[in-house]
Length: 106
Image (tube, rainbow, N blue to C red; front, side):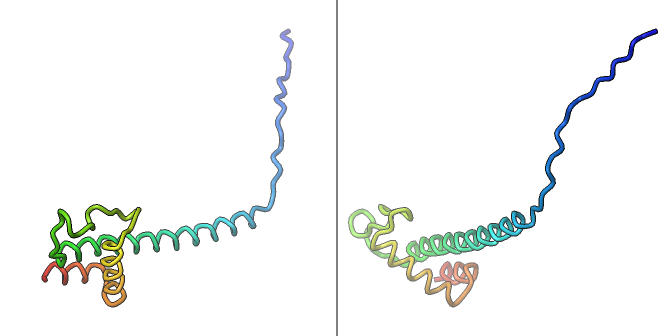
């Protein structure tokens, strides 16, 4: 007769714990991140609209009189700041899509 050995695999029982606080914290984090994303999306529209306004209305010589193209959105100078302020003012009145349509008609 064959000898049967029972193979007993030891295992750990994971401790079951209340995770409601973690879930609540993560939902709060999601809310914070969604707000941050909304601000980022709006800021991107500000920058894009500023570029469109500049392209339509700036009549300066871009070789030596207007530094807009030499600046960046990471390092906003006087010229970009001027057009960014204009874009923000427009976006307080109308949506981004409407502003683009109107400005492109100028």
